[in-house]
Image (cartoon, rainbow, N blue to C red):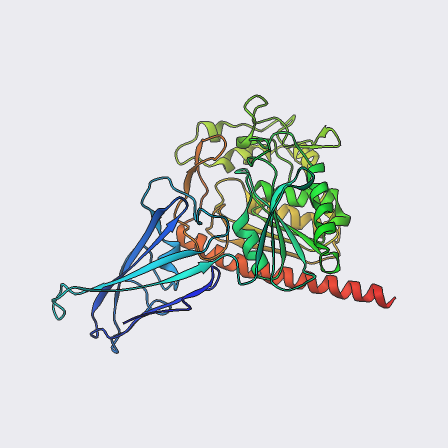
Amino acid sequence: MLSITPADALIDVPRRIAVDGLAPGEQIEVASCTLRGPGVPWRASARFVADAQGTVDLTRDAPVDGSYEGVSAMGLVWSQVPDTAGAREQFGAAPGAALRTDITVRRGGHAGVPDASEAYGGFVQRLAGEGVTRREVRDEGLVGTLYMPAGPGPHPAVMILNGSGGGINEPRAALYASHGHAAFALAYFKAPGLSDYISATRLEYFETALAWLHRTVKPLHGFVALSGQSRGGELVLLLGTLFPESVSAVVGYVPGAVVHCAQNACDPALGREGPAWIFRSQPLPHVWENNRTATWAPWDEGPEPRRHADALLTALQDPEAVERARIRVERIRGPVMLLSATDDGSWPSSLYSRMVTERLARFAHPHAVEHLDFEGAGHSILFPYVPTTQLGYAHPVSGRRSTSGGTPANNARADESSWQGVLSFLQQAVAARTASSGDKHDD
């Protein structure tokens, strides 16, 4: 009666959920449940009407009511909400652990099918594919995790940096490795042995990390990409300008175009207008510094749900402060990909991404530049297929509540399209690097 294919695959593979053997026109309920984080159930459900052949197929059929609207093969995943209010952890408790989603089909209790009955099934979403290995890294003061693909290599490499929540982004690293990249998820605060705050982060730490990655992994043709989200998106652009000889490509998820102060991830002793980044013992100029128009009032005093982006927009009205804080992206020596959202509640990632692409065009950047801007989506662009329903949240450092923006459906579409775009971008960037390496060898 219930079929799910494939039953076990990587998390970014959509599944076909279908129910056969129903009466034509019969209504059924299909429900999902996944244990995430420390064992919190996340659930969704929807009702469907069988076609003339007595079949319901979620890749084809829209629900008549339920947790989501419209045709979406994985709607019962991205529309899930947690049983525990405020829960946000979307993955398993163990790093890189697979997720199992249980599917229940309920029928009956209505004319034509008086006896209620249920059917059960499920599927597994894996972050780490077969043969992927995991290694904790504590060398040279670094705190991170290295995921290596199956096979002897050499493999192209990518270093993954989180945003203002800090920590180690193992899920993304595991999935990058599953697609053939040596993936180094690096923490720079809010991890064992590191500061609890982003304030005064020394950029030489990343210089050490890049050197370690090149030396240890020996990536294919020396290819090392940077991938970061939010403050990490700002950071990867910045690192590409400071260490261009070590960075082959940059992927910025909802990135910044200017250097920012510590903001919500600040050390309270230094304050949110204190520096986030220190380089060669000097704080980098940031957009809030000596800014004539910047005010936190739209964020501090604005209506609920508060949007941090509203405060940052006031800072961008001082062109001199913006120019002082601009990231000199023209110094990057490789292709650049930017992923942004038009309803970003955390900061204006669409505007920031346009600022970056315009500056690269102004300086005739000789490498590929891609910008995917997702209409109606918010700040939390991840990868498919995970829940997208938790728009309001308490910041993991400051505890202040705000909205990341977007809608669950638009965010789910951004998750899916962005990931396909990134994989294609990296494939092309590696191919360009390979061709360039071949040309140099021929010379």
